[in-house]
Length: 447
Image 1 (spheres, rainbow, N blue to C red):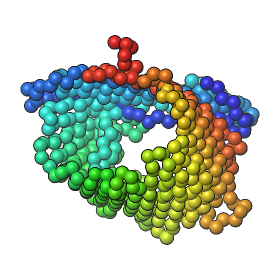
Image 2: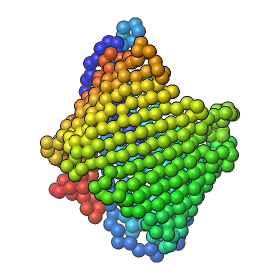
Image 3: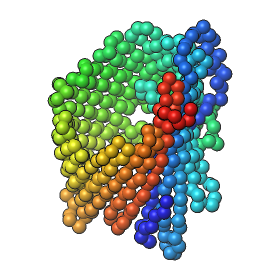
Image 4: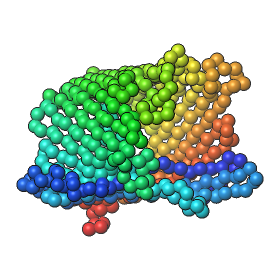
C-alpha cells in the first residue's frame, strides 16, 4: 500500500484498534476456590471455539524542515478468540490482543504490543460464576481494567451480587508489564442488585481504589432503571466519592416511543465533576467547576426508509454556556442535514450528508462529506472564521461470510492542511465451531 502526498502536509493512513488480551497468573487458585464445591455439576455443553483476525496497514509520507522525505509503513495485527465448554461445560477461556509496529522505524523504543484482557471463566453452578485474569470491569460507579478475580452470585430470586478485587492493570497494558502490582495499586469492590421483575432494576455499588500506595477514589454508586416494553425506558444514576467527599456524577435518561410507528423521543441530563484521582497532582487545585450537559432528540423513520431527526445539546460550566442544534432528513440511501453551534465555546455552521448503497450481499458502497464554517469565539469577526471540509469514500467486500475487506479514502481541507489524503485498508477473518459453525468454518471449509 503506497500513498503519495504533497510535500507540505503528508499523508497518514491510520486505524486505531483498541482491543484486549491477557492472562492470569493464578488459574489454579480460581479452580480451587470455585470448583471445589462444584465437582458434581454436570453439563452436556460441547466444546466450542471462535477466532477473529483483523489486520490493518497504514502508510504515510512526511517532509522535514530540511526537505528530507520520510516514508513510513505501519501495521496492526489484532487477534481475538475464545474456547468454551471445557471441563464438562464449566470452564471457558477468552483472550484478545494487538501487535503494532512500524516496519520503517529503526529503533524499537516504543512498545506497541498490548495486553488488554485475558481471563479464565469458571461456572460452578448456574448461581455461581467466577473470572480470573485481566478483565475490564464496569460495576456501578467503578470502571477500570483489573488483574484479579470477579465473582458473580445470582441465586434464584430478585437479589444478586458481584464481588471483585485484585490490582489495577498497568496504564499502558504492554506485554512487558505483565500484571498489575498488588502492593501499590490494589482495588476491590462490590455491586448488589435488586431485580424483582423485568420492568424494574436497582443496584448499589462500592469500590476502593489505590494508585501508587495512595487512595485514589472510594466511589459509592446508586442506579435505578425502569422499562415498559418499547414505550418507556428510564435510567437514573448517582455516584459519590467518599475519598474526595463530593458527588462526582448524577445522570438521568428518559426514552419514549408510544408505538412502533411513533417517533422516538430521548431526553438526557448529566451533572458531573471532572474525573481526578485523589492521588493525582491536580487534585490539589480547588474551585474546579462542575459541568452540566443536556440533550434532547426526536427521530422518526417510516418503514419505507424516509423520515427525519432533530437534536439539541447544551453544556454549562459556571457562567459559560454552549448550545448545538441540528436536524437531518432520512431517506433509504442515507441522510442529509444541518447543525449549528452557538455560545462561549465558539460558533459553527455545518452541512453534512452520508450515503450507503449495497448492490449485492457481498459489496457495499458508502460515502459522506461535511462542510463547516467555524470561529473559536462567539460573535467573531469574519476575518476569524475558518472553513473545514471532510469527505470519505468506502468500499466493503464480503466474498464469503467470515471474510471481509475494507478500503477507505479520506480527505480533509483545513486551515492547517491544504490537502490531507488518507488511505485505509483492512482485512477481517472470522471463524468458529461448536454446536454450529460460522464464518470461514462454514460448509466444507476447515473441517
